[in-house]
Length: 53
Image (cartoon, rainbow, N blue to C red):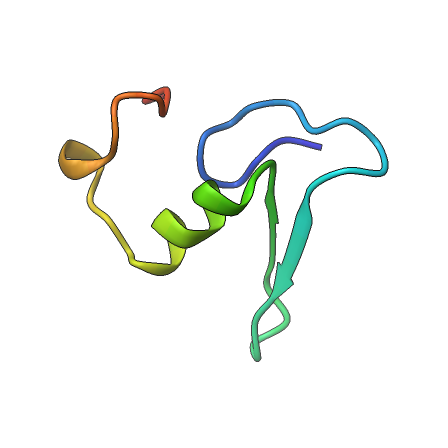
């Protein structure tokens, strides 16, 4: 699996899964990826540690 925010590979048994009301699934490698994703940050205002695709 890959992180839905930063694209980093997630090891099996780690990470978090967020399921929204519309049944869409999002996987996160860390709590900070989840927090930034929930804040709905734009790509130009995303912290430097995030790889942009």
